[in-house]
Amino acid sequence: MSRRKKPKFEDLIEQIDLEIKKRKSKWNLTALSWMDFDDVSQILRIHIFKKWHLYDIKKPLNPWINRIISNQIKNLIRIKNVKKSIIQKVKKMLNDGDIEIL
Image: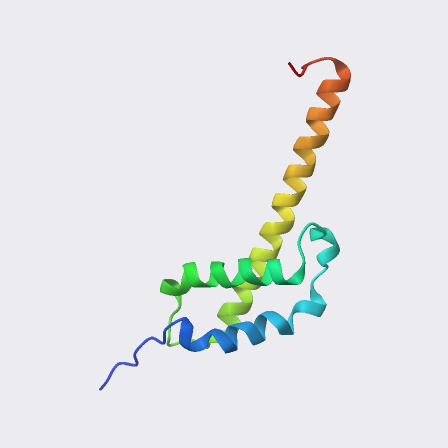
């Protein structure tokens, strides 16, 4: 019995790009207004590449890719919200006189 060889990321980039593009209309990218679709797509490609060693060839690729896409979009929105929260707290501290800029 021969084992299936794991495909290279580069060999499946077209399929990965297709999955990313298929979800473009479902994303609420207004939450990520500081990034456009190309920026987000590149972040997703890099993240999928970094996780490639975790892909199990016994399972279908598309659901795995889609899980990564969904989770990474949530992470990007979470990061943006954290940054916004920090900025608001610093502004409040400045206004309240708790800190000052030297």
